[in-house]
Structure formats: structure tokens, C-alpha cells
Image 1 (spheres, rainbow, N blue to C red):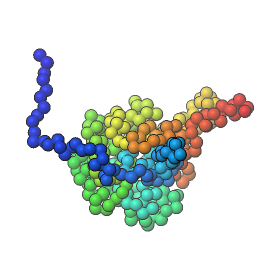
Image 2: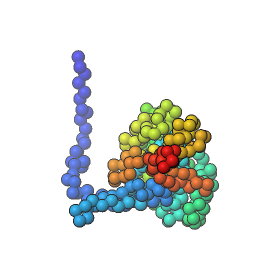
Image 3: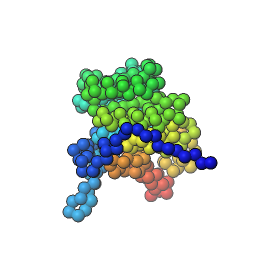
Image 4: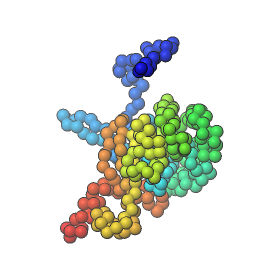
Length: 301
């Protein structure tokens, strides 16, 4: 006999969840960019019609009040990008909440200090505007979702932050990946309620393809957040790769790609980026251009 599931009767009133679209106009956030100080800022854009033609206008940042997931293998630059974003925003006078889940907070100090110096923003302003939640050394926060959300809310509301970084969201469900969707959904909803522009760092497992949006917990993060950025690295190990990419054996080509964004249009190409000597990240050129130049050079063109 087939089992019949019956909906549980409650005192729930559905009227509060049903509204005409136009009623949301006053609550809808503006469409503009929150700068990361990297080439990513020009890859998000909005379109408008002018003289019967569609015109693309760079957003000059990640979308305002978007929750963006950054995923990749170890040593692909995820934390560097998050630190650069946090230091740049804090240096411009905007409050940032930085939740460190992997590394104790004291190790963040020097990393942010170095980023501020490289960016040319006043470190005293960064110190004043960057609020740190140390979940790495506090299991009561890291391993208890309710406590984590309460602490996040306290930090954002008390210091009136505009931006939030969580490095990493994976650390909140480590060894409990079956809970990934529940954890990510709760954090995402809280960040939305708090009006934050946010970056969540996701770690990949060794069995997962490096170029996909999948991370620990499967696609739970990518399915829930507003957009995903995939960071990857290509190790040149043979002559075929060396010829294809025009790079010597043993070298590394770092790539970055916006896998998707539900809030605004975006560039879908894979871009080559570099981590400069000062630790800053910036985009160089589309990967297709690098390959095209390498092929042209190998043919003597």
C-alpha cells in the first residue's frame, strides 16, 4: 500500500506571503556595483535601451546586496580575493564584517595590513571599519548554527556593517556535509535580512572537478546564493600544455570565471589572473586570447 503524506494543519495564514509584484518596488535594492578593486568589477554589467539599441554598462563591482560564492581548490587565491575586497571597502570608509572560520583572527591582522598598504588605502581607517568575528577559535560559534547567526547579527547591527565576508562557509558544516544546504540557506537568508553585500568562500574536495561550481556539500552553496565565482589553476606539466598555453613546463596559469549570477548579466568567459608580488589579484586577459596568441606564435604568425 502506498503511503499517503498528509499536510499538517497549523494556524498559518498565507496572506502575508502573497503580494502583487508592484508592492515590492519600494523594497527593491538599487542596481549598482560594490567594488572589489579587481578586474572582476568590469565583468558584471547592466543593460539599458538607448535609441532602440541595447547598451551594456559595467557595474564596476559585484552587485549591491548580492551574496556571492567563491569556490576553488586550495591555493587558488580565494582568501586573497576576500581580504582584498574587505581591505578596499574598509579603506573607503565602509564597514565590513569579516567572519574567520578557518584561521584565528590574529593571523588576519597582518594579511589585511599588507593588503591596505598595497592598495594605498589608510590602514588606520581599515582598522576602524573592519569588524572581525573569530569563529575559528570559538567552537560554540563555529559548530552551532544558531549561535553563529546570533553572533553575525550582533556584529552587523552593532557596527552597522555594509559588507560581510565568511571565510569559509565550508567550515560551518565540516564533516557534516549532509547539513550543507540547511546551513547555507540559513546564512544566506540572514545576510539578505541584514542587507549585506557578501562573499562566502567555499572549499572543494579532492574528488570534485576544479573548474565547476561544485564544492564541499555538493552544489548546495551554488544553488542558493546569488552568484558563484570559480577560481582555478592550470599546472603546465607537459610539452602539449606548454605549446597550448605558451607557458614553460612547471609554471602555473591561474583562472577565474563567473559561473552564474541571478541578479545581473555578466561576462561568461574564463579569464587569466595573476597574484602580484604585493599579494593583490587582478585580471590579465581572457583565456581564449592567451591561447590564441600562443598558437599564433607557435605557427610563426
